[in-house]
Image (tube, rainbow, N blue to C red; front, top):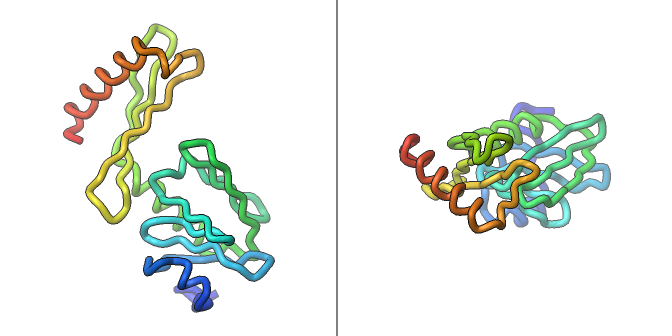
Amino acid sequence: MPLFGNRLPADVRARLSGERPLSSARTPSGDHAVATFVALHLPGGERVPWHTVDKATWDETGVTITTVTGGVYRVDLEEPGFLPETIRERVQNSIVANRYVKLTTNAGVRFIARRIAGSDVIEWELAFDDGIDGGDPGVLAAAEQALEQVRRSLGV
């Protein structure tokens, strides 16, 4: 595989809506998964922005992407090329801050600040430990207060 990959077919490029490809990998069906500066473009037209990726796991046949909202995408690949490294770098690049704060003696909340690629916008994700009801008004008020303290301490 050439250093900068093979040229992408015109229909795959058109699906990118002008985003510049960083790396790509071919699927067994002949389609492509393409990483751009802003998102991972999957066969079938799915677009997964980097700031929404919670985790990517690889095995011998492809990649599984899990989003922060619980969405799961699976893509089988013929040869991954540089796609795994690009996905890792882009997801890590989106994370501005990651802090854990205890809300009770046994549990707490993780605050993750993510940068939306191509903008100055930062989104905060709250991940509550098991056993904490993030919908409870008291818990939510405590979490919001803790988030404000985290924002001030980090300047974000």
